[in-house]
Image 1 (spheres, rainbow, N blue to C red):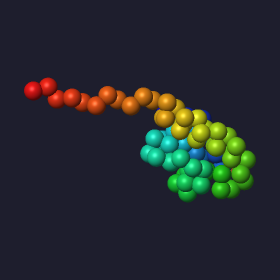
Image 2: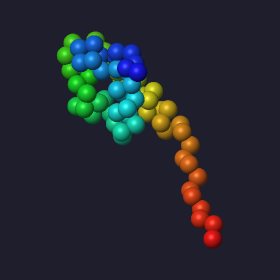
Image 3: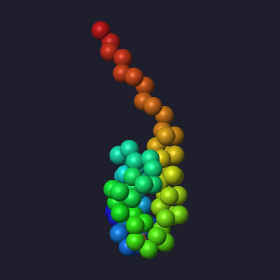
Image 4: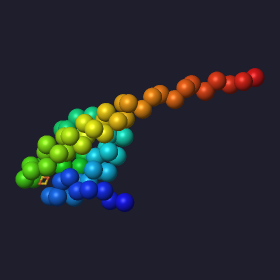
Length: 72
Ligand code: FES
């Protein structure tokens, strides 16, 4: 599944942006460096920023898994 194109100039999809967020990207500059998103015409910048922010918020909203406790 390819997702929806956010940046047409560089073929960056919403899935690509969510994947980058899952890999630890938290800032737009880092997203640009990794994907090239919004480094051409710039039309996609606001949408790309919103997509990254939403992805980060979703990741941070996931509760931490309980620690594994070994039973002897
Ligand atoms: S659409 Fe992203 S730089 Fe042009």
